[in-house]
Each structure stands twice: as structure tokens, then as C-alpha cells.
Image (cartoon, rainbow, N blue to C red; front, side, top):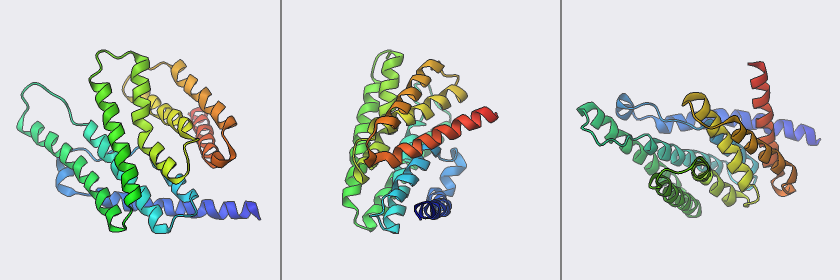
Length: 247
């Protein structure tokens, strides 16, 4: 009976996953902005983990699941969009100036959407959770940007906190903080591998493998209370290994 319930639940999750993505895509459409800047980036690792987290909390209503997932991703996209704004000291062309201004405005647009959606249903506590995460992320970004010649270790340490802060705050809001380190290390693995693949990053394979080892150790030691999170991350790790093997 337990296996049957699990199968039904996973099937429902996959079905909802499709509608969630359609809802997110609908919220992100704003024709004029996207004529001048690239489409907003969606961090697929965070998107998948967030879907899993909201679906596992059976105390949430369907409306809460939808709002928590969509609004959190809008915040993440807003933060990522603002990071794409170039910092240039030389004179810009008219088109570059317009693109830069629209990049900032689009980030603000996505941020405004999440406030609007949550305020509609009176989710004050969740708004506060996201606001606290945004504040801490901005403080960490300032520490990183104004740090003179950070070492690789310092860069990774600050980047992994920035990278996972929003998801960690949402996880703590829904559950507790026992999986913080696991989530932080797993998400930085995804980030570092993307950096290595697409940006010719200097991050070595040894650094990435060390995080993978730590994730594997954490999966074995975390309490039963967050076992479902460890199982999800372990499945994702195994899927990545299988994909790499096939390629």
C-alpha cells in the first residue's frame, strides 16, 4: 500500500510540475522588455528542488503551494536578472543604455510581482521570510563585490551562501534548518559545474568532488526528519552520474 501511495503522489507531482511551469512562464511574459533584453534565466536545480519542497509539505493548501513556488522563483529570477546588469565606466551606446535600464526594470518587475501575489492572499510571514533572504543576499553580494582580490576559497564561500540563501530560508520556513548545509553544498555543485562548462571557470574538479563527497556524507548522517530532502538530492546526484555516463 505504501508503494502505491508513493507512486500516485509522484505522478501527481509530475502533472502539477507542468502546470507550475506554465504559470511561471505566464508571469514572466512582458513583451516590450523582452524585445530588448534576453529572456529571464531560470535556475533549473532550484526550480526542481522548490517544487519538491512545497509538494512534500502536506499542510499547505494547493493555493499556498502554487504561490510559494511561483513567488520564490520570481524573487530568484529578479536577483539573477539584476546580476546581469553590466558595470561599465566607459560611455555606452543608446541601445546599451536602454538594455541596461530595462534589465534593472525587469528585475524590479519580477520583484513587484511576488509582493503582489503574496499580498493577495495575506501571506505576511512568507513575505517576511523572502524579505529577510533578500536582505542577507544583498549584504553578502556587497561583501563579495567590495572585497579586494578575494581568494578562490573566499569567492566560493561567499558565492555558495548567496547561491543558496533564498532556498535555505524557504526550507527553514516550511521545515527546519537541519538540511541547510546539504542544500547549500548541493546547489554550489550545480553552480560550479555550470561555471566550469560554460564560462571556462578555473574551478578545479577536485573542489567540485570535495563538495560531492560532503553531500554524500551529509545524506548518510542527516536525521529522519529531513530524510525526504536527502533522498531527493541523492536521486538527483545519481541521475547526473547516469547522464554523464551515457554522454
